[in-house]
Length: 310
Image (cartoon, rainbow, N blue to C red; front, side, top):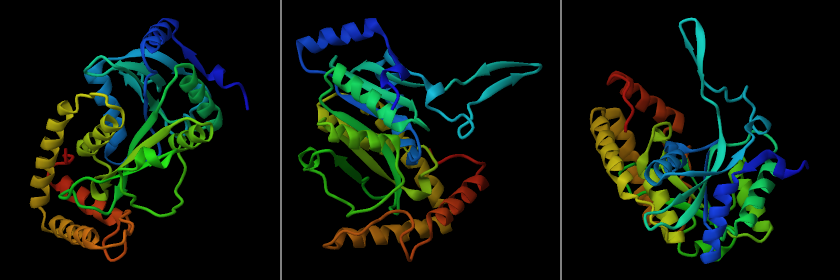
């Protein structure tokens, strides 16, 4: 493996300020929410946007995305204006320093998930964890599930040590899923003796392609409970309430969608009453598939003028 330290740069002033604070107490928690393979409801992306907008940022680490991204698989957007190229939405992968509402610093790793050199990227993040004495790393994202939006949001918590998630129920047994750089990061951090955990927030699969701030609120609350940070969740709660009202309005306008939601409610309630736990992953048998549900919901939204359920 090539030298991991050569794929990122550290701002010396930000590093010095962070080191000074660490001498006065413990190191900062690292939260990571990168845009990657699965983020139903844009749960992780909305978390990153909320934190950077509400708490402000100081750039600490900048990764060399030219070494990590395959531009042909996720082409950045360029703007053509009349006769010239005028703008380029340059992708980034960075670590910022933020302070919570009480002034406690923490780190946020966000941007585009690497397409290549995952092990080198993970080793680079581990170097950052060790350099700044990070005691805990937490990842967040959304996953599509066969659940209705009318029931409480559930979360799958996972960690490198069982006691980190002792107060969370397990929704799954042993399953195999496509890998992500964030999942590999958690695995490798645990193997090297560092505490790491994550929250996969369950998003109704018929809303997986929409922004679903309710899921982001659940993720933020999970981070707060795990770390004691004050992340000003109330600022996002109002947006979640607005989204819920809009979803209810649009569901009420379609008998077909309402029927689907009622079927999911019956399944969810039966599951809640059962003694054992079975998977509610999208694609559960005896119900329409995620694609069928999504297509029906999208068709209904198109009839309303193309608005998203936000």
